[in-house]
Amino acid sequence: MPDPKGDKLFVNLSASQVRRRLKGVGYGVRKVQSAGRNMAVVIHTAIGHNLRALQAIFADVGSALTERELVETFEHRSQRQSGLIPMQEPLVHDDPPGEPPPGD
Image (cartoon, rainbow, N blue to C red):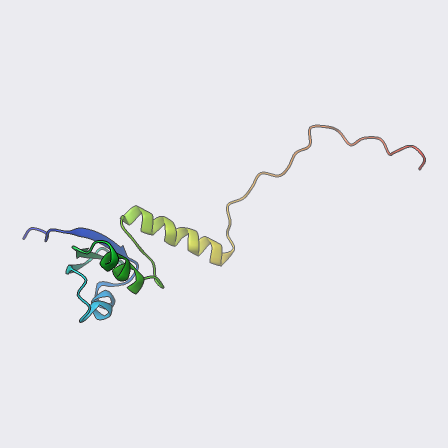
């Protein structure tokens, strides 16, 4: 069976939860498919205001127009919440410690 025509919106929820949120809404939603664990794809024909309204429904859990964008956003958010921020290199001073100022 071929996929329905339309654009894709990747959502960080299971397909059943996405269907519950979209029940009775419309906005040009053609189909909701599972894209793995806790990830769904909404195939839609929404543009302009309807697209923004569709994205607003999933603003609290995260949605993106591409799968890569959603995964990067989710990873960044989880690193920030867990406190695992990428390590920075320590500052290295090129000059050796100077002599104490005169008068001490």
